[in-house]
Length: 374
Image 1 (cartoon, rainbow, N blue to C red):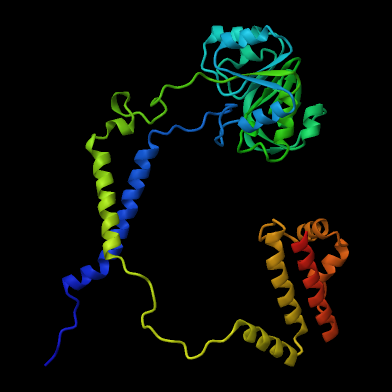
Image 2 (image 1 turned 30 degrees about the vertical axis):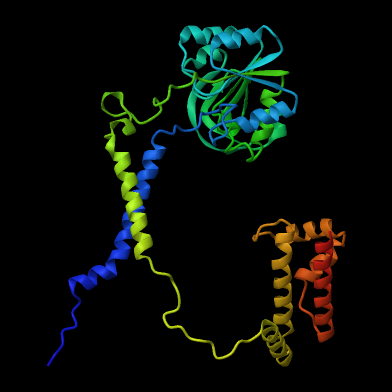
């Protein structure tokens, strides 16, 4: 008599339910994250108070550390009021959303001025500079004799290109005409890009020429206006029925409870005692004897050096990808030993005799001891 071995529906469900539950949990988690993140607006571009990648708080802090006062304003009236103090620089960073009359008022403010990017009334803010082309954003060399550009070196610039009107640098993406400086894009001043190339140096040279900076940013956006708008001007979150967030939360709780209830601890398929336990010291000694029997000084020295480096690199505060020069330089500072000797011990040729191998082990122990003590 033959016996059927085809799986039943119940058996198939038992095998597949764990995967189904995990898939549902992942989907619900993604939905919850999307709902929660729906009301969160992006960082404010070139805002000296914004700590996001798009903001410029890092640059503002560097300017203050150099003794430059940074005043964040979001209106032309506030900028005009601060201008009465004199010896100030006006920065028009993020695209200004004011009208033509306000652009004329900004242009009438005395003192130096830096205009960033594609402003709606660029010809009013920088009347002597002609903007005619777009440039790809990338690292660019100065290509001019401007002191700020020569001190900074390569900078991440591009965006708007300037054809005429003054001293041109960085392939036309920076131009100086009198007291007005125009840069094609402000990404080099953001928290994300400031530490790259000579971005920080150029930004500090451009904005640190006066004792104070009037940093103009667009007026704050009312809560909800930055969300993706749907029919009737409503955001995605506002279009969701009021019961949806509760339903998602209840479903997530139900899936979590089910996963805990049906979950299985991972462990050995069959509980089996090992026939013998080998101590670590015996394993090391046995490997050493094998190296000695085969005269494998190269492999033994490599094992000693790799093990020493694995223990030293974290103590020096270096990453796993640190190069030879970085490790040797850090060890020389930490231990006070000669860099040439350290390089020979850690990265030199393999020992030619057993006595040299023993000496190498002693040198490695000495280096580790000095690092621990210092």
